[in-house]
Length: 568
Image (cartoon, rainbow, N blue to C red; front, top):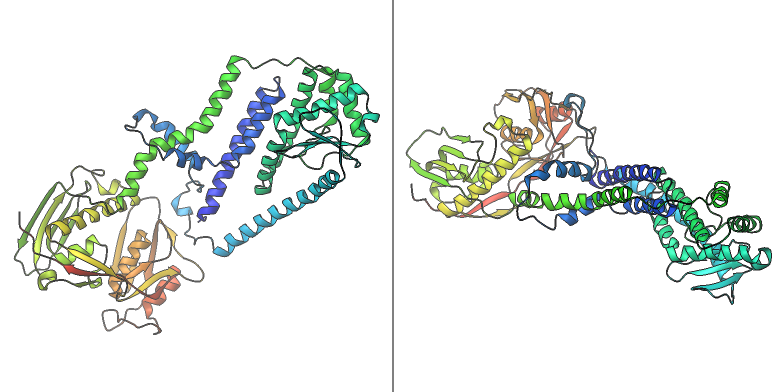
């Protein structure tokens, strides 16, 4: 099992990788258009790494349709599969061994390695930043008319724009003497183009992405594409403003000849990207076509789907999510039909029959049994109540306002059955409060109990086969089960031990197993105090199932008030 924070992280990674692949296809289709368009697409791929789809789904879930249209189901299902937390692909159950959750040590090790990588990346950038800061400290103002401050530095760093919110154009000392006036004007136009486009801000955002996802090769690939298209877009803009291609190309070559490249992406310079390809693109100076209407429509559709799709899915699924969250809340659920009749019977043949529509028939049952079922406890976990609480018997038939499940319980999944019984218990608690005037409170100082936990070497359970056949043979000295959940095993052990058994294994799913032991000759299982030597059943649980029974305390239900109901 993958911890929640790791599974969500892995899910976000593959979503972002898929999005980057889609961007790569779009940039390929737009290779004959302006570089500015491709640059914006790669910047969107970078920002996507900071915005999980699940965040957009959560945003959408804050809103709700008055009436959700049925035709959106296929779309919402597709987006939900993309936005949900990372989970392994379904495998045949027989091939899926039960395994304990990843240990806290493994999670801590993962976080430590990740933080260490972040620290290394940040340290390298700090060292490069100090070089630029040293150049700024020794710089002096230049009397050049420009929309930002221009300064001259005695260092050999290439011309570049430093700063995000208050940028400064830093020129190496004497550069005007090494370039012709035309070359200097073109280089200056290039740097001011970076300022107008706010390229330093975009580069700083991607540096954050690289620090967080330093281990992902796609992140560094996106960074290279950003620099490539950024410089190409500035070159196109400089040529559009009237600079001669040959003069501009010679100016870039002279800068590369005399000065060092800018050490940080967020300090935009002149010499980024593949120099040979860049000079060829400048010299050829091809007239690039504008986007056609069809391509504009394609980009708009993709952008709208990427942003609005998850939000729309959250909006559509909001009513369902709220309904599920309210299923276990304290809001009372009631029955449409309720029939309660007192019966005079000395036989203790109680019967509880569940209907798949959410109904329930209870024959010859006591109020104590009803309370035990309604609050999901054992009868020995109930304290208090009037004298007739565990002796007076009733026939009760109840029916919900509308069916809540398939016609056959066997057609339900385990989660559907659990939800059905949870809602049934909630309705029954409302019925007990209304007809029996039942009031209770819970107490943690309950009777001795056992906690079923994972043994030291982990579980030895085999996942149930694909037949779906469920059975339980609870005989003397053995328990044989097919398709049994650990929760059901805890109930079976509780009946054996005469004490509550709390499932604290964290194991989900259903399992096949056979457990055998030599029963005590004295008959029923003796109750043992903490520290006593465990008997054969305890040993069998640990050695044959890889689980362990430990001493614990169980919660009890204390009955404060109960009255006899009026019959109907």
